[in-house]
Image 1 (cartoon, rainbow, N blue to C red):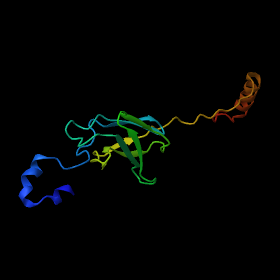
Image 2 (image 1 turned 135 degrees about the horizontal axis):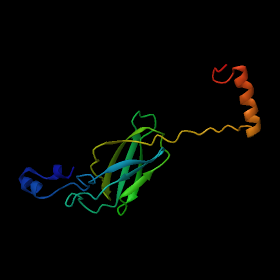
Image 3 (image 1 turned 60 degrees about the vertical axis):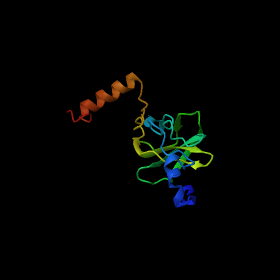
Image 4 (image 1 turned 180 degrees about the horizontal axis):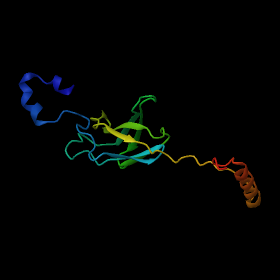
Length: 153
């Protein structure tokens, strides 16, 4: 790294300058929540002031399902974007999510890991086509008399 290029007689310079060309802290205020059964919305604030170490040109959201059955993926967005919807996820599944900022020199420090659950999803509704009222009443009265409906005799 850069500091290795300094000789020992320049050690006072190391403490005066931040030598990292990338953000040394992740974005602040990261949140994630289910927006549907197959999507999550991830939001964040800027990298804390003084920790950018250059011009932040974008953010990456890194995610993987907790069981790691899918490959680790990431979404990159420009510097002026502070949230992203991640779609095409597994229903009712925990995801690990991390966010980082990057400069033209590379990726900064990654955030702590959030664990967020996608939505449970609606239960599939099954519809049954019933006969007309007259036919239904006929069916029920016949089967009730014969003891075939609900165990009635």
